Length: 156
Image (cartoon, rainbow, N blue to C red):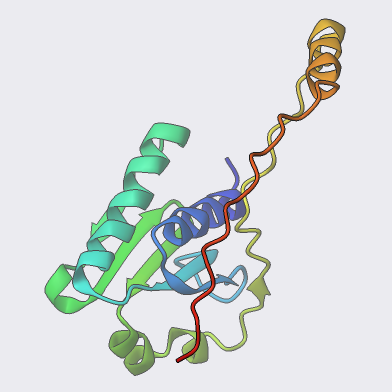
């Protein structure tokens, strides 16, 4: 899996837990420690934990890739996960505003997120199933019973 694919996968998993203001910065040529930053905002400590857990678990399950480094704690309101040359920053709004990573790395171009998972490939349909659906569609609809009207109230 290439670094940009890892960054986009982490962004997608963070989005699945309703993280906000998700950005991927391309630091290639700008930083000796990382090629991509994924920066996301978690609105509370429980969401900080949920976003971190979602990324870690799904990267292990779907890509057999545990993080190289997990740093930070919930009290600090800033968690860092490192996957090779991808560094994921999960911050609360206050910490994100205070540390202003996007401003610090202002020379880094922002990558397109592509948060929607790829659509599943269509399966070929059997002709028999299509014929059954056509027959079912030709049945006459059932008649509806007439609605009873409530007696009108008389004005006093």
